[in-house]
Image (tube, rainbow, N blue to C red):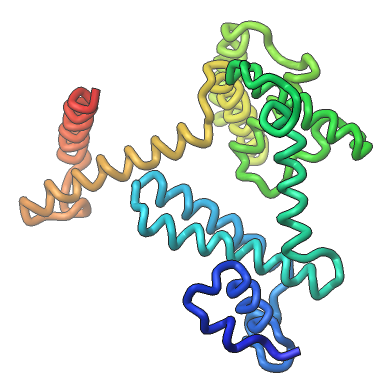
Amino acid sequence: MPYDKKLVNDPRGGMPRLIEVMRALRDPFTGCPWDIEQDFASIAPYTIEEAYEVADAIERQDWQDLRAELGDLLLQTVYHTQMASEANLFDFNDVADAISDKMVARHPHVFGDESREKSAEQQTADWESIKAAERASKAKQGTLEDVALALPALMRAIKLQKRAARVGFDWPEIDQVLDKMLEEAHELNDAKNNLSQDEIEEEFGDLLFVMVNFGRHLKIDAEEALRSANAKFIRRFKHIENALAALGKNPQQSTLEEMDALWDDAKRIDKVNQAHRT
């Protein structure tokens, strides 16, 4: 069936227009050759990338860019549902209905008879209980079974640890986690001098994993903390580059000592700016 040209060219066509645009792109006879060749696996990396670009726009508080990035992310959902529709698996309405059903079921204090007079902590606990019941109803075999493999490693570590903690597999005291982190750091230090590269990598992974756990006990999201550290590093290194450019130089023409001094300047500027914000 040919695509609806009037709808595709309607500037106010909204969601139906986007779905029709994707259907046209995937048309095996008149669509785009690249789009036709794609499958779930080939599109999945773009889906992950677009989600991070949404987060980046929010971090920069660029609301015009956020609108565009949310559109890009929405396109990914439409892309996957179009492919699923072609395979007679499900369509966009099925996806929308499924998430609506989930939200209604997980918010009995809004859509049901439960009281809304709860703390945020109690609502979070109730949410996790409902999710656990949903997993049980799907006959999941293991506590960690459905933690998605494609998640970024730090984010997946957090989810694995939270899931294990819910069944009692967790250090009760934060000092125990700190002791374990120091132990892993010593093991990595020993490994770098005595073990193979693969064994060193394993010890490094162990240290990262327990550091994520330490952050979780401090109520810190390791993924967000590292994202902030990345942004801080970029900001401070740009200060180095700008300061050197004012002197007619670039980092390659500078010394480590000079760049270290400029880094300290950037740290002082950060502290001043932070003091002004508070």
